[in-house]
Image 1 (cartoon, one colour):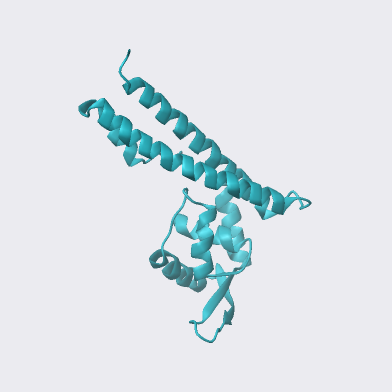
Image 2 (cartoon, helix red, strand yellow):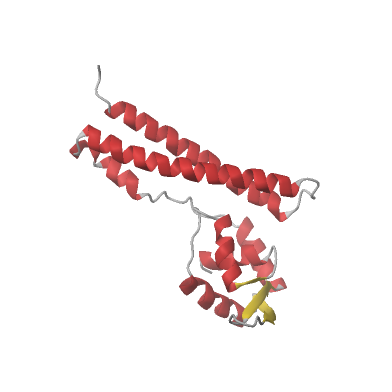
Length: 182
């Protein structure tokens, strides 16, 4: 099965959702996972045909299109559990900026420092988003069972925080290496 399926099953294992709600919930995986409507809706239809999910209900609002609410089936949950514990390949980092830094020897240091500063700022903004999300999630889980789905969400966001901190530190190191020695 494709990775999008496991992302969708992961969300539906927590609660029934519409395709639109799934798209909004993809923020839980951001920046680790992004998917558009053109991926989500066709995959939901395939998963329903295969018995991994089922239509729970259709919500009809007066001035909006009907929303199909899907839930995971036992077969879908079994598939998700099997995938979760199966060994996998080590992922490779694919970051366009790494290639740009690889070519930084061709660029005037001041120009490259300016670009690194911009990238660092983007990562600082994302770090603040993650830190805010952590505060929100930690407040939500107070008093919850250790098996609550939000507990595992926290660990993913903590990874995001550490990743952003590392990226910021790396940008700072690059800038210091490019600064002219005095």
